[in-house]
Amino acid sequence: MILDKFILFTALFISVLAVTAQDELPDRLSLEDCINTGLQNNPGFQSSQFFLDENKTKVDEAYSGFYPTVHINSNADAYSKNNGSQQYNNYNTGISASYTIFNGFRTKAAYNAAKENYDANVYQHESNKQDLTLHIIYAYYKTLQAERILRSAEEAVKNSHLHLEFARARHQAGIVTRSDVLKAEVELSNAELNRIQSANILLNSKGNLNQLMGFSSNNPLELTDNLSVKSENMPLSYDSLFSEALNSRNEIKRFYSLMDAQNSYIDVAKGEFYPSVSANANYNFAGEELSGMQRNWWLGFTLSIPVFKGFSTKARVTGEELALKGLEKDFEALKQQIGQEVWSAYLAVKESLEKIETSAKGLES
Image (cartoon, rainbow, N blue to C red; front, side):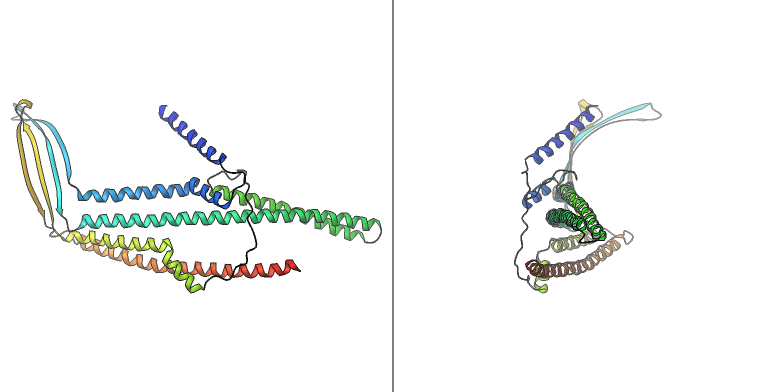
């Protein structure tokens, strides 16, 4: 019951915080407002941040292998001999420590692998941030576009009403036939249908933008219209854009970290071929009675030399090397994918600039 109340209180508290944050937003949201709100509220992006924090703890866990391990142990035993005729007690309490001096560089390799994996997730998180920002920008301008299309559709409805009234007046005057009136009525009906469709497209665009910002789809939303015709020259050549993408894309940096981590995993596997050396110490009190416990201690070293493990170490090394080769091929596929994305975006910008120029001439005419 107490746990249920705590969960309910937490949910209500988070809801109040979300509503408060939403109330603090201006009446009309700019593009920057939408991006900042999305980065703060989007649950998918928040999950990415938690996943990144989780991987940071794995780096700390791997680094713990450089430290010794210390245990405090206490136990009490009772046993008997000669069919229970003799009974003995044994009490033991003390502290023990162990430190790995050498294990074939596996600890260092495991730490490097964890660190490189964390760096890879940092780049992935940054990619998620860029993707969310891009989606918000796209949804923002699609909403502005839908608003302008709706206004155009509403103007078309007004014009169709005027055409219908004009056609009816001309029909009453005997200038045109009934078919001209029917044609104007059909034009008005089509304009009304287009207006209804445009209104729903606008609502859908707002719902998509609300979802990206972490709000409900039906949240009231008003945007600042900053659309304007821009006179821009064609961007740099495809080759220069592709080269810049390979140098700056976080996906590329992420794969470099993943391949470095995989090299470290190979070192971890190869470490199984080497012997391991550890230092061990123990200090305790032991005895058959609590009042008669005696002090004991010992210090020693342990050397373990792998002789034969059924070829499992060799198989593991081969597996890690094959995994690296797979990553290298995935990296080549990623570069091809980025090249196609840059090419598509390059053509889209080129087409848009040409459309703007052609539409401007049409508008002037």
